[in-house]
Image 1 (cartoon, rainbow, N blue to C red):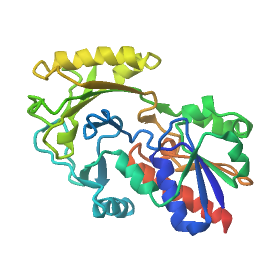
Image 2: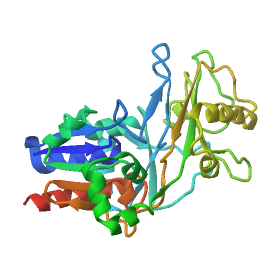
Image 3: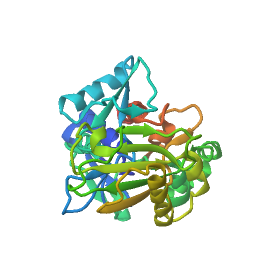
Image 4: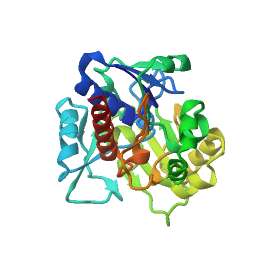
Length: 331
């Protein structure tokens, strides 16, 4: 069986892992994405070849497990057993909400290692050749819903247009926008002069910044080279959704130094990223996990747009439901 996944984020990685387990080596998976690498919003960005061990997680910062959720617990345990994630040390953090039923984990080698783990045994083919779609027996679309409605063409768009109820529900899905700024420091900077490793900024204290982290310290590595990641607030992102990331990034960089006057300015590199579709603020109605658009050939819409929650656990549960439906339709 040959399946195409449109989108190379965590949802496609999880679905591909579960498909391989369900169908074995007889399945062939092809991933289509506009980016050159897999990861989506679980991306780790590195400085450069002269400073290869300095990196920041530009998207998701850590993973949260609900201890009472037996479905997702085993997936977290696999990541723990393979030393992909470890508990987040909450000492010297500001603003993290405590919940007795939750455990937060960081990825010591960067959040993108979680994607690599889920895709490592699947021999995924990454392609931008649209003609290969004609050769598959099923298509699973995991990109954000606004991109489905605005970017995809051909049969998928036609099928959506033919189902007005689904189209209306898809149009209700909304995302927040955030900008990320990563500051990279040379090894000569041995201290960033901050008393915290993670700082959730109160909106009353700053209208631009929402999240700050000394990224290597967040991952329990409190030694040079240091890096700092900053995410903007939802409100700021909403005002600048269509603005250039470089222009906004330069403004945010200056806001970081204004808010943290003791932070060293001697950076060796700065990188900017705009997450136009950062997190779900309004999901697909009823949160079904996936939508079946067509049976023959099989076409499904999946991913966190249809999940119960816009987080790693929600993506796991939605991926499980998606693969269950494929198995049932092929039985």
